[in-house]
Image (cartoon, rainbow, N blue to C red; front, side):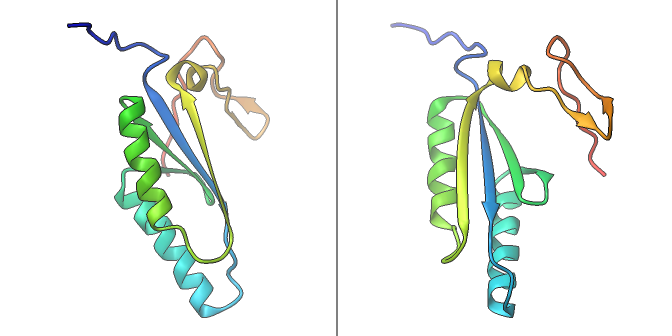
Length: 112
């Protein structure tokens, strides 16, 4: 039996980017429910309309893609970006003009 070796190319991250209308009470409620469902599915808010989720494998990622697809609101734009753990580790985050992490150090985010 072939063993799958877990490495930075098999572990995945799923990013959800969205721009949802909030002009009416119904649209605001739909946008709020969408964000709430993302949090319930284990996503973390990076920015107000950018959420991320760690997935242990491509199969796990596929499950979460289907879940997100199932609760996308009727109107607006939602984009999903799938990246490997290796690519995620190369991310550089800045807060203001001060660099928080470089590509040689793991990204550490503070939740407020």
